[in-house]
Amino acid sequence: MASEHAGTASDPVLEPGETMTVVVATNNRGKLTEIRATLDFTGWRFVAAGELDGEWPSPEEDGETFEDNARIKARAAFERFGMPALADDSGLEVDALDGAPGVYSSRFAGPCATDAENNSRLLLALADVPAEQRTARFRCTMVLIGQDGRETVASGSCEGSIGYAAAGEGGFGYDPLFRPDATPGRTMAELEVAEKNAISHRGAALRALREALASG
Ligand code: ITT
Image (cartoon, rainbow, N blue to C red):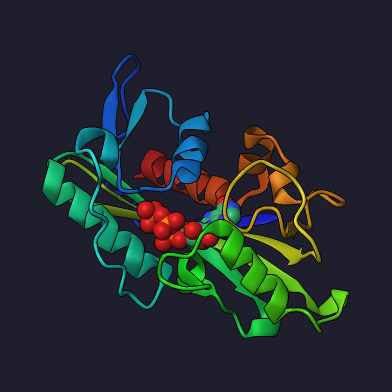
């Protein structure tokens, strides 16, 4: 199952009928779809940085943790657009690979690797690893910077294992290879967006973020 925790809350909760526009500092359409599909953010409008500024020149993600990198992206968008900004940094940790690819998940097969190339590299790296040792988890950390510049940080994870072949057309990234413990017999790519959000690292982080804002 997904697990979640949140850092310090900083932003006010919206009054009924109010709308808040939040720029999402991502070029990843899959992330944006999942963030927009979450039902926990009534009154929030999520706009991709690229929708405000053509190609969003994502800053260099040279942090050592998901939180470092989420903060780098959120700060860059907050400073560029002067409005509340949300960033998601996420990745896959494979136990048999000592936690790799981790923060390097999007570039596991090289700097401009496609999802298909990353998945091939992962299958190759695990070629000799038996089923019971193919445990893994997705992690996601969200950093939200409010209009006043203060941060709220929230994280989530999702336990599962890596299969032997891709299955499913949904989601993005490693979803066709990732078999969540919560959905036996199906990969993450075989779930509808709402099903994925209900069990995923990103869904968990979004719920934790919402709770942190509501209790702050
Ligand atoms: P932005 O930085 O523009 O948001 P990105 O794809 O480069 O997009 P990250 O640096 O956070 O984002 O890298 C996340 C990578 O981890 C992503 O490209 C996938 O390879 C993997 N990943 C994260 N969440 C995933 C998910 O829900 N399903 C499958 N793969 C995921």
